[in-house]
Image (cartoon, rainbow, N blue to C red; front, side):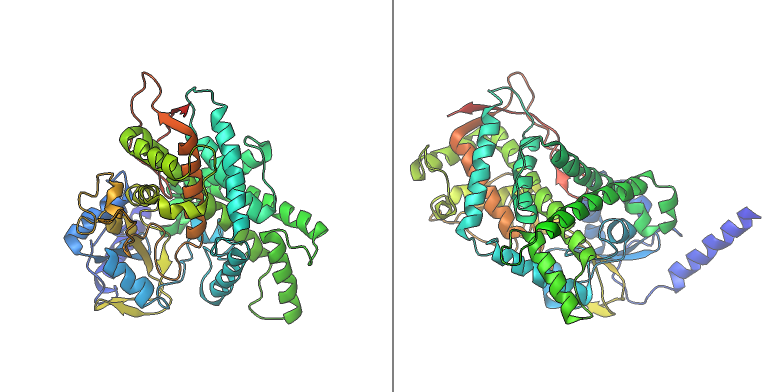
Length: 488
């Protein structure tokens, strides 16, 4: 009996896939009943490799079904810009995906996971906070804060005494302290137990997210997926930690002394209660927004810097050139500042090249179509999940000759000045571009230049060069590696 029922389900699913699909969808693989093209993509160790191969067959805009969900993948700068900039009102929502929506975003709250009017209000408020603390305006107080953390960072590296160490651990601690200061109004010592536990939960969720992705296309999998269940448990612990911090702030809150992001949010929540607006932000929005700051504010910068130092030991001649420029412009005693960027174009070019070649977020966060629309003559129905294949832009050989080659000079003009490219979109593009882009670049420049000013980074004696094959989770992380430093 069960076999007959299963056969009937498969037949009906097959008929629906052939006759029940929206007409004039972008081309794409037919897939199998129930699972769609999941098996096609499982052949690839890295998702972006599968998307690149499908692009060669179906073009810059193609569709596929994964389980019960329809996906449209955008490849190349023009297609991504047409959707996210040219039709931003249609392509700016987030999908209600279990692993993202229910487990991680407080049911579609916060800055990253919300949609529609709630997202617009959350983003507008967050932009105001970033301006207030100088992230988008480069106020001197934020610069001083990053410079201060750079000194702690340099001391921590110095304390390795030339012995091999994993740079990722110290990098994450330094970057996390900037977010700690902005959100909680405090920094913690590297290795602080409570902070380490919190960051460990964030890292664990990032690693599990890809494995748990099956629940997004086959919801019944949530009952048997250990990865999804673990994500839910980790998120409960993260939100418990965040709620405790909010309560501590409420007990000491002073409207005349706004200390950090939580204070500003408390002030906004209380103001919203008085106004009685139907679009008021509440504690659930606050909790999700705080989580967003840590997930988005730590991962991209720390991964980028970890890649950067890997490239320095793999390309010592580039490291030496950067150090010569730093010695010429800054010397070895004055601390680097943001004003030095203009005089250190090769440092900036190296940073831009690292962000390009590492392509930390090769597909960026998924978007969702808010209402039926068209793109390049194809029908895109409401609810379609849209994947921007960012790596297809960052590795486009028409834009970047020999894209697999690490070459900072592609970002320098004939006069040695920094060249900016609209197509350089490691933080995505459109109105859902990463809010932390400015902060990430500030941290990258100041941390990177401060450490190269003081140290030369090398491969440990007798060790093999770091493996450049990335580890794939939500983003492309470098393999774990060790290096040594020598005081200059």
